[in-house]
Image (cartoon, rainbow, N blue to C red):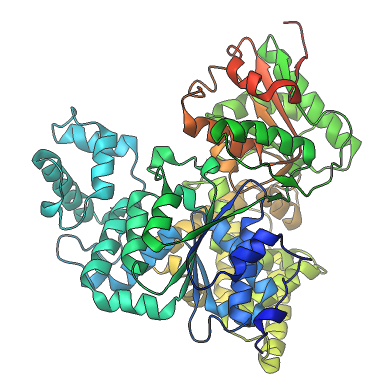
Length: 612
């Protein structure tokens, strides 16, 4: 049932700020929504999607395409829309940029010209410094900078012989394409170039996209690369499709990966988009927002102050630099402090995060013994398990699908898991919320699935072989083919096998001698464990309390006044905190970052926590 535009109200929240209303009601032209830390970007996009779908502005069978840069962000956005607008969820496609372009290649691979067409079961390779350096060394081109070569691959249009690059570099890129595709692989840089060619040469593919998606959302737009923007421009430029791009230049931390310098400016010029800034910060309380503003003002002197919407819920200091002379004192104090906070109650271990600039594995080895001695369990989510980082395994679509089934089987009464399983089955079988018969069938299927998995778990032990078999049993129960059909990212066997292998490997690692399946699943999800991660991987997350381990000029050697990307990374990481953000600083590790301390001023005092 359609809702009149003037009568539509936000779903699941009380209201929106005035500027959010303005951006939401802008449906005739593209809009750039500049939303700072904690502004509720995902919530805004979910509300705008509900508005477009429920009012009929985006009428059936047309859809909204929402493109994010991380799998968990895409999943989160899709789930938000489904909660607010369940009857229209099938008309909201929430995918990552890589998922969007890869989906086009998987669908139209046969239309690519010979030499640029990957095999059906291609492998996706992660091309970085070592990969490119090895290629250049093998082709007697070690004098070519690997980053220059990376950009040539990422930005060179197909066919390669028409690319406006020096002849030698062009020949190297052509050889690279031939070698990589010949080995049955492609990188996402190459996929972007393939998609740009398809959209440029095949008018029917572009026409199909325009007919399907009159509205396109671009989340975290500040991280868009030149090649990705070229795909967006090729797909939707010069058309009536309306773009809503959300992001914040102060949070552009992917410059090292090719993020555009002035993405919003280019979007406004190319799509005649208007710019609207949101001011609310729903994540952090006033004192933390004030510190965030000090950092934000260093990045952009003209930035408007954010309006804090969160209450302070803790006593004592909310931010400080803890100064130590020796490493042992630093680690011992940190372990004891976290243990005391957990003993005091009111906060769970998974809501306290330890952030490091890099080398998470090394820091894990250093601090884990002290934390364990204090009774604190640590989890390094950057660590590789089964060929994948733990954090990536947890964000996989397959993980999100399988976990509720395992939870339902591990406990006789778990209302949330039962509800989640019902929703998953409704989605897999395309059951409309208005289909009473279909809903009853989904309920019955959820009950039967819970009983079947519970019987299986009771009959097996928490052993490696049983875990691998259990994963396959649940996949078979749900239907592997149906899972893969509903998740285009798993269309290829290799992609599905990778996700299944990572899930099983982490589940196996989560075993506890003599433990129950519920305890295994808790460890799998990180419940009861303090997460350790890099500052870059903290983007998109939020924690009650954050501790930056090692604020010194060695750990943060690239954090200099003129390095905009690093101060933005620092800003993004600091803005993850809801209630408190502390730093450790050890003289044995490195010196003070005086210019940063001057920016933070009295708002983040330095406290001596040992002899210095």
